Amino acid sequence: MRNVDKRHSDYNKYASMWQFMRDSNEGELAIKSGRDKYLPKLSTAQTDESYNAYLNRAKYYNFVGRVCNIARGQIFRKEPNISGLSEELFENFDLTGRSLSSFARSLFDEIFIVNRAGVLIDYSVESGRPYAVLYKAENIVNWRTEVIGGELKLTLVVLEGLVNEYNGFDESQRKVWRSLHLENGVYIVRDWVQDKDKQEFILTGEQMPIMNNSVLDYIPFYFCCNTGINPEVSKPQLYDFAEVNRGLYVNSADYENRLHMTGAVTLVTRGGDDNKAIPIGASFNLPADGGADFLEASTDGGLENAMNKKIEILASLQSAIISGQGRYVQSAQTAQITSEGETATLKDYSRVMDIIFIALCELMETWLTGEADITVEFNDDFDSARSTMQEAVQLNGIWSANGITDHDYYINMREMELISKDTTEEQFFAAIDAQKKKKVDEFMLSYQQTWQNDQQNNSQDNPDYNNSGDNNNA
Image 1 (cartoon, rainbow, N blue to C red):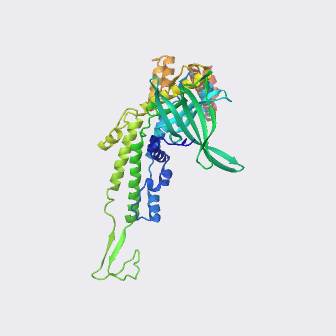
Image 2: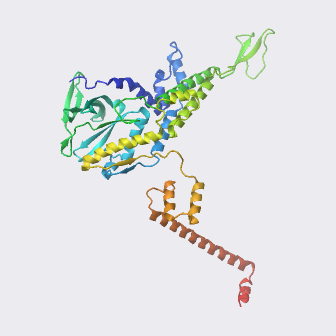
Image 3: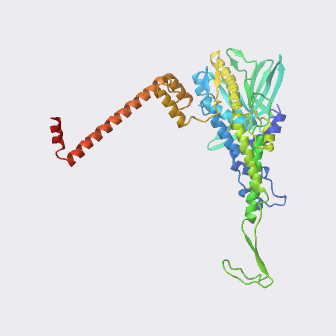
């Protein structure tokens, strides 16, 4: 068979965009490795030596990577709240030892950076349980949907990957393909390799997965993006953000190049002996009609202003995405850039993660136990930072004055994230009682030592102290 590796038209359209987004997130090394793909030459006549120097002077300020790190940190500031999922699935979600939380972080990165990923729910006969496999956008090379019985269903997904092959100490990689089919209402999996002449694809395996003694009538593959589960390909939300970041990189290259060329003040003389060196830090003679001037750039050509404007735009866009409260706009240019996908704030991403993992967990739990009642909640509390010390002191004061019950005090301490969510109410107040006892014991010990020291000092200063005390008592 031929053309197992055929690319979907949307794959060809978006592949370079996905690579750009990954490079932008990775940082300066990846961006500079792209050379003139991201930093054009000054002219077609620019030599490689000149371009290399121009490239090396450029600075890439990684705003894309920073906003991704902040977003991930906000979403996973609290562990997702999952109920109804078997512990063995939660603790080892993909049969590689990764928990659901760890798997979710990887999936979130893919959605946030390139706005596309896929998750296949497969079954391990050896382990006797289902598991999840995460596929990057670049590994999902082809797909097809059809309306069947009034419902849009996946009928084809082609996945491309690499397997390692070892020969003693040597290691090599070989491409393999897995095609997922829905044929006559039955889910079928086929595995492929390509022959050595790269002309034909050879079928190496075929299976019909069974769930609860029945074949599946759908492909258990989930396309994930910032709108939920959807096979349609769309532009990454951060693409325009990354383009502004790249523009800043180009501006920095020109700015650093200009500083290199004109940053040093240059002495220019008129008249004198061309063959005679001009001493530095000493006087020298010139003809009466000669003279000397210093040559320096009087302006940066607007480059610094252009860079500052881009930094302002990037800061505004970052605020719009991270705030979780909608768009924040400082200029018309920023408004134009944010208008597309302006609702994709962190709260939206949190809801999308809820939708995706409810679907994944329900299928996995049903495959394992025959039934499922799953709830999933990812963190969506981005409006305020963790409680301040002043708020904690105020709460403690109200409780100490019997202004609230012990139970309400405990609940508020948990909601303010001042104690671990795993701490029970009994453990919390037991720790408080232990702390109080420790402080009382420390105070009594300190008081006793102070009293003993006072007694000793008074005895040394006044030998008759003890006797006078006895007389007084008498």
